[in-house]
Image 1 (cartoon, one colour):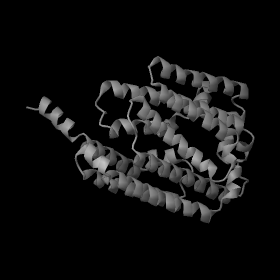
Image 2 (cartoon, one colour):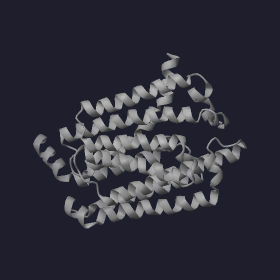
Image 3 (tube, rainbow, N blue to C red):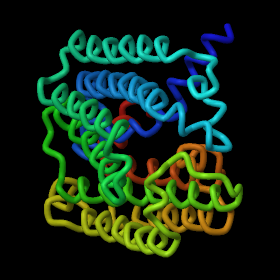
Image 4 (cartoon, helix red, strand yellow):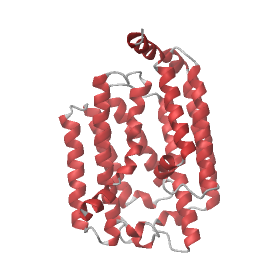
Length: 306
């Protein structure tokens, strides 16, 4: 049982929330209520979850020595020795094989599979080389999120808006640099050497400048998407601009948690444990779906309510 627990720790299922980005094309293409397209998106979602877990294992193998230097990462299964490197490689291969098996068996479109393969190749390069290069490490993370959105679009044969791609680029850079800031501050407090060598090429002023620019860019890019001619024409409303309120609050709340509460090293933990952030996310999704699917919701109500 303890070994299974260690394997789950390596897989980091709590990080799977990042893969909800594959649902973005489904929601914004007004296909959320199409069972076949929802199923196709769910398949690529689970494929990305298993693939991401496979990459996490490889990353832990690559970082097993440097993780000893980190106050928290030193307890990871491979770094602590509770799971051997050989076991790690076997688990990674099994997870990756399962991901592509789901993709193929589910009839996932070819280009969605290509995006998934590109995600694997990019993250392998990241694990062994690219994460050591300043700024490039942030853009690799951003490209990974963009590939999730593209895969979601390819899975249902929908073209993803360039504004949504830009918004994804900026929000992933924002989360990535916030994570770097959290690590930077943690290392400064502990007085220990960082397990992430690229941190030595950053400083707090640079990190905060990138954080500010990316935060502003997220809000601007999303706001421009909501009022773009294509968006207004597709949804027959300009009301989507009001959802910018939740995006803006979410960014500001995250900045508050990073600067005042010393959080940010684990973005997933922040997003899933901070009550105002969770409530804001729920309200954002409800308002988004309510605006985009207004007619469909009215039809459902009329169908089932006398």
